Length: 247
Image: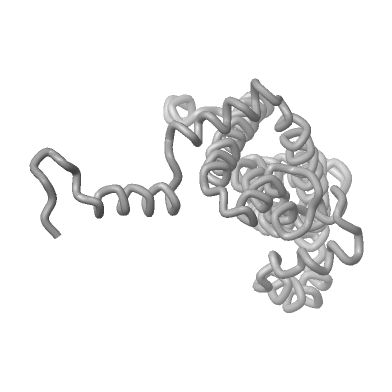
């Protein structure tokens, strides 16, 4: 179809409309973010819910993984008995448990925390288990020779070794806790950023969906930075690589 000189062909507008439908419009996307944070300011409640779910899942999953990892690492018989069950549970795609948790615990915070705990637990568990197993036999022999009992060995030898491995996996753990919270909200919830994205998808509002994704990305970066700061503060006792080479 020929057009008059100086006029834009119709298919250009059609392509623009298709791109806007699938990818959104940057100006509109940032406008939605501004409206949620400043104009209506209704996103803070949803962000708070997602933060609480993430922190609870991270804390509970880390504590359970630490205890279970220490127990099985120090109990070879229990580890041999439970090893196939742990491997089977770890190989299970745990996201499919979200609907089951929704039935068990309802659509509130508890079901999202349960899903996040199942994701965090195995990361911490395997790190702690490996950390205890890799304790230097020389250090153990020296501690026993100095008269250390089982409690002192746990406190001064096994726990520091396990803690180092736990902190090395903090960033992955908090990321999976965050994923568990958002996925749980997406599959069934009445609050949270995942719930807002689900509502926008149901209305084919791609601009709000993209705005929610940008907010979640920024939120995840803030959580990661907070974990990094806590890690640096709590791991001051660990020498840096440069200091280790000097020693």
